[in-house]
Amino acid sequence: MVCRLNLGLAVVLAGVTMAGASYAAEPAPTTAEDAALRPAPVASAEAPSVPGLASQEHASGVLVQARVQAQSSLYSVAGGPGFLFGYQGPSYAVGLGLGLTHIGLNSGGQSGSLTLIQVAPTAIIDVWRSADGRARANVIASAGYARASLSATVSATDCTDNAAGTQTCTSSNQDNSATATLIPVMLGFGGDYFLSRNFALGAEFGLQGLFLVGANTNSGSSSKAVDVGGNAQFAYGALRATFVLGD
Image 1 (spheres, one colour):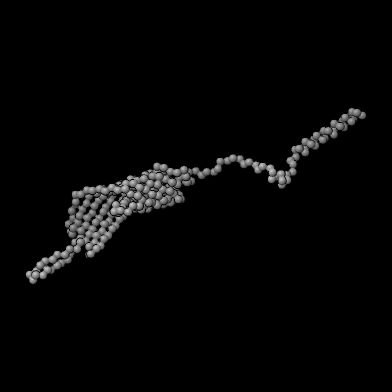
Image 2: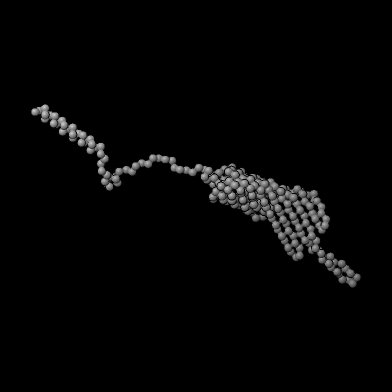
């Protein structure tokens, strides 16, 4: 009798133990209050996606740059090329600078004009850039060929006395012209900020020089070479806008 009682008690205890283990294994039902109190799962720490510098680089391709002298003086008449056409690379640009200056005067029947044409191979080398690749600092250098033409029309009046004591005057126009060959050089430091991959605004400053290497004069139908030399140097400042046709 006692053995049967002990055996039955053992069976009951085993059943209670198994039921408790099964209940503990089942997840407790989640209520709205429990969900609000439960801490949010921690997301795995991943490095933020940072685009490489290559995506921030300016485009490479055909370069078109407009340049405007910032100073206002007589020297700015020969202030270097007004446009630069060439190729923009990742950290450099090479091109051909072109400049055209024309000044005309007319007063009292007399007229004159000055024309200056410049062609200058130019190189721009980057020496610094910002982390995002948009801001650039660079040096610029060029040396080229320039031709200046000066023409003037002068009115002259010639008077002679006649036997009657009166004067007879005649007027004539005389055309004079001169041409000069010059070597323009430029060395400067500047920078650009690319507002987009294909467009940038910038500025520069530096030194420019003009060296006179030859001249000719023409008066009427006669022409002769003039043995003359000269040079001029001055500081300059310029604003520039750059457009790159490329990817």
